[in-house]
Amino acid sequence: MANMAIFRQIKAELEEKGARLVAVSKTRTTAEIMELYAAGQRIFGENRVQEMVQKYEQLPKDIEWHLIGHLQNNKVKYIAPWVALIHSADSLQLLQTINKEAARQHRRIDCLLQFHIAQEESKYGFTFAEVEALLESEALAALQHIRISGVMAMATFTDDVAQIRREFATLQQYYRQLKQRFFSKNDDFKEISMGMSGDYNIAIEEGSTMVRIGSLLFEE
Ligand SMILES: *Cc1c(COP(=O)(O)O)cnc(C)c1O
Image 1 (spheres, protein in one colour):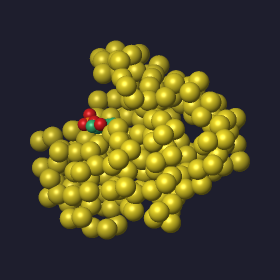
Image 2: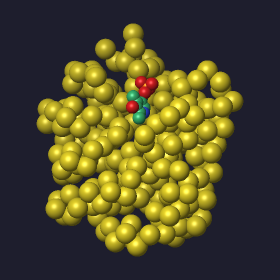
Image 3: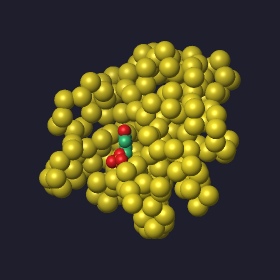
Image 4: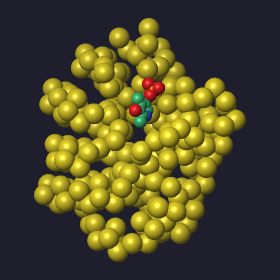
């Protein structure tokens, strides 16, 4: 069941701060999603393609579906016709695949560049140097069917609030530097996707424009 009191409280907080809510609905039922939909929520995030496709097919078509988890090249085609935003673009090859499938659908797909900022070992996410090289490359410039609309990252899973804050501040600095160097005349590059159930307050203080909240919205 969705926790409507928490949902309304978070919505109010975010509205005041000018950030948007991605309701992370992975593992939740379509009935639970519809509870939030009925209260006005339209952006939902999923981390697995198959689950997102099933929910897309069953649910109202004005839902904006955001892919927030690692995306395999061979799965892009299943979501390319309708996905609203891919938060987890983490390689040139994946961006090329998204571009190819978007071209087939005669559309442009919005993508965020996922950074690896946490201390945990992770296979996914760019370093800052990798993104600089990517944005300077002709290979990226050739991709006319994607739109780089910002950055995304996850903080370390820890109780150390100061560390989480430092990591979010790092992502916000990355965003600013990239904006200045590569997107100063491009209004599409505007999103900083950071903050989950346990750390969204810190993320907002550090400049998040989009928080991805799951468990908190659905707990009893
Ligand atoms: C699951 C998930 C979230 C939401 O996490 P909660 O702690 O349930 O709020 C956010 N971002 C990503 C990438 C996730 O996989």
